[in-house]
Image (cartoon, rainbow over all chains, first blue to last red; front, side):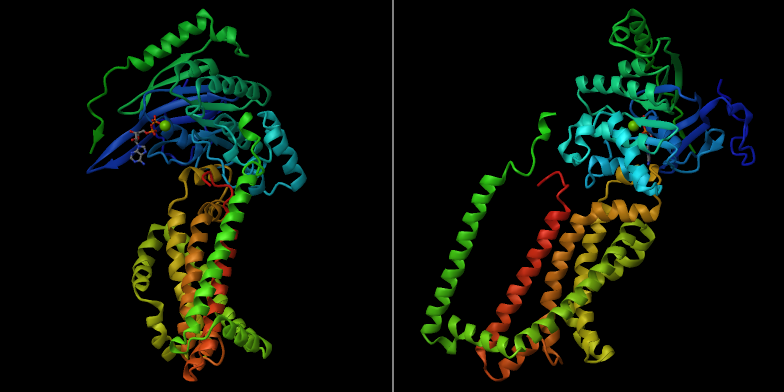
Length: 281
Length: 265
Ligand SMILES: Nc1ncnc2c1ncn2[C@@H]1O[C@H](COP(=O)(O)OP(=O)(O)O)[C@@H](O)[C@H]1O
Ligand SMILES: [Mg+2]
């Protein structure tokens, strides 16, 4: 499925035929950070293909490079080896074709919900009427209609994150990159937002890469769960979730769900011990 | 959903009462001060003029236009220097906060000049720039600039990187990040810096006017000193105090308005 290229730094092969079916491809990406006189491998040689419209979740222990992986797709982190392709074109920086949702919401606190949602549209110089219409659509989509003119400080955590999702949707990205978006929310709100996200996704289908540390959440949302391991950061295995959409409470409580969850749980919590060779000179 | 019904109406009643009480106390304190002053003047201490005498002189100076002219001259200097100072401080603070290279290049100068009282530069400014408006405005500019540049720099350094990332992924370039993220996020710091800058500018004014000026509140007070004209000195002092207070309050008001979005308050 994923083809690790033998020469990932070849600048000429921008239109690779192997990526015709995948929206987002990680091609042997790696990232090292200098520590002392050596290098720390945050992420080593990861390859992953995500199909158009697919919902993929990533779970793994803290520090295994999940955020690094997502940051590369967002164009906020530069890979030290390999590259990320969006529709076969190498990612060179951030752009409105990829929406990012951060765990800390990252709303602009001085702007109302509406102005937050309009932020990307203003940057793109979308005409006022069109901008207003698209912002309103995104606000309605996440159910914040009654709070469009509220400042973030007056909103609950769940509402803030819905605003962030609306802000990402408003610029009409092809890919949504979500880094533990519900991590700071209570369990009840979390389940509500999971359902709402799936609902939004089914109406406005996008390719989603969703990071979480919650095994239930990973299985409930995804068609495929990517389990990562640390030191060096890598993909341990990919678990297919053969459960139909729309996902319901019935599915969440089903035996099939339990079986897949157990499999992912086992993969996350019983990982092989860390490789001693975490540092290279 | 329940947490969102709190408009500005909620704290209005107790706040209004507290405000009225504070105002009453403020007025009482001012009245007591005036009474004390009148009493002290009544004892004939050092030819100290009483409030009535000073008010009378203020009336005269207002009537012949001297006070207004002096005030306008002083305000023009302070506001020009202050405006130039803060307007330069914001981009310089931004450069220092944003680009480590700029910081490394500029910080030695900023830190060094901060240790020199702007007044100490007056002799140099006069030699280099003559005795016109330029050296006075320059010294005020420097005072305002040095006070607010550090605040602006700190504001930029403190901008949440996630907000910058959020703007970048929505398509913001350096310019948009500066105008739409860094400036508003750093606004609380910048406004505090501006208040300090205004204080320094105002504090530098009188000294700058003591040297080679033809009009201005500081100049007028120095003239009065030559003629042992205490009431005029008092009028000048009170005008400077009242104007300084008014400008500070104005900035404070702007600060409240512009930072209403902050979580704590
Ligand atoms: N700027 C950096 N400098 C040094 N090490 C970093 C930096 N960013 C991340 N790392 C390290 O890389 C590893 C992976 O980080 P991250 O992708 O944030 O992990 P995760 O999101 O899975 O918790 C961690 O061990 C982290 O300490
Ligand atoms: Mg992370």
